[in-house]
Image 1 (cartoon, rainbow, N blue to C red):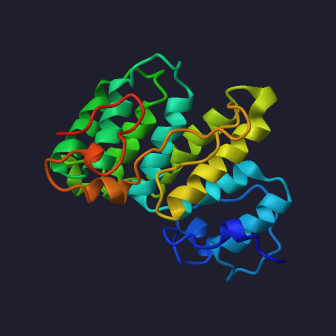
Image 2: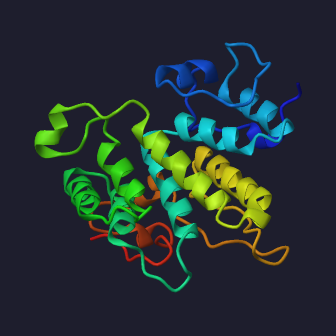
Length: 236
């Protein structure tokens, strides 16, 4: 199978074979894949796209992205679930702050936001992912306990699916947008992709790539490198 150009240059994705990535955390694709077990993620993504298996593409991307990038993608999906005029709930804001400035303090805030979140707040998945992104249940005493395998990816995939099916009539377009966001992040971008809800030729605002925000330097805040995440202020 010839791989489309849009699956090239995904330097942030794990270099391991897709089957190995998924098996390592007990994740399974629902779509039968003909690619050999040694096939890398871009090859499997191309096959899944050809088969119209968007949900499985989202699953594979969630597991193949590094934790920090997966959390950012989850945050973008979470914002899809909110009214345009609503401020970010505390769990989402805390997770975004961790992405823009990862460290013990922002991770602790994400864990606190997770513990205080209402059980029906889907954005709590962002805080969970941020607090477990280092591979443990959280900072402090929780740092002695490993996080469940695939916890970050599971949260990112769940939010992507919620975003995709928030409007069943637009699920196909929304799913394609979610994939495009993840591919941009995998190239080192901030999740920039044309918004299917906008007129042709329009683009969604530029969200900060995690690495670009980090490059702004301590105390500078993400706005020194790129515009801060929608609806949030620069971390200080």
